[in-house]
Image 1: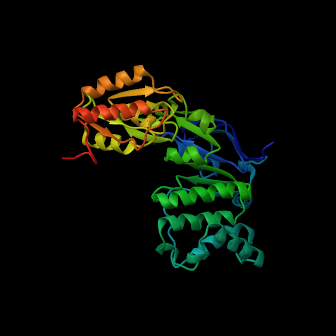
Image 2: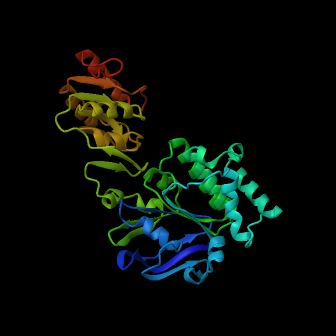
Image 3: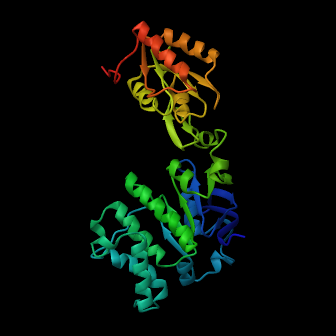
Length: 371
């Protein structure tokens, strides 16, 4: 049975007497990552602040392990839970190493003197997040991504049961986002830490989370694994998406396709058509695409952006019926682009579409002319 890091019972949160979210029932297991998702203003930050006692609950109970949060002393809480909330941490004349060392203060007593054991824990944390090269640099002069790693190191050397983070990848470029997510996954598994965070980046939330808590309105809507949450169009419903769509396979958004009769037919497959579809969408040109198998990597993008799409069932040879349908649509288009790089047994009829386009003089060679 998994060891509980943090759990709640009928928790209600808010500011003053104003209720924001109620009925929160979660269990964040040690060694696992729990991520809060939901639209802006749903109350994710309010929930996190309540979990770390920055806000008093309006009802219900928070437990860290078997202990009630409200009964822990300040020092016990500091040892049990580390918190990184939104907003830049400002320091004066502090090295990155000094910031990390602050994580050990719950263990140092009133004088705040680090022991040899404390310094060993600091060095271990610095190495774990790979900041040896900046450890003696001014904290205020390193990049946002490096700052986050320094702060994570400070949390690690505290050896908490629970780590709480509010939008930890905000302002970070893709390099540091991926690095930080890797650090958190390793921290959870190697240090047996329960990690609770909020994210706007749904693709990352889908990839790194063991459990997701979905918040909308005044109550949590769903609590479950990514496989349970990213299905059946639920994410589009959660965020109220109307001017586009979200691919549940990858957790990535797509714009609405262009209205109107297709002017261009794209012969794609195997992911080759994705860049062409998006380029035509940027240019505002309605297009048709085919013949795409329903298990093809580019199927979600083609489904979202194409004005007309000819498909075939997964793992099936392209039927004569699908070919005729694609040929009929292609015959009415001004131009044809062949994005497919090769043809095989499964998509041989697409080669025939290419040959027909060449005979009709509709095939566009090379990149589509943006002019």
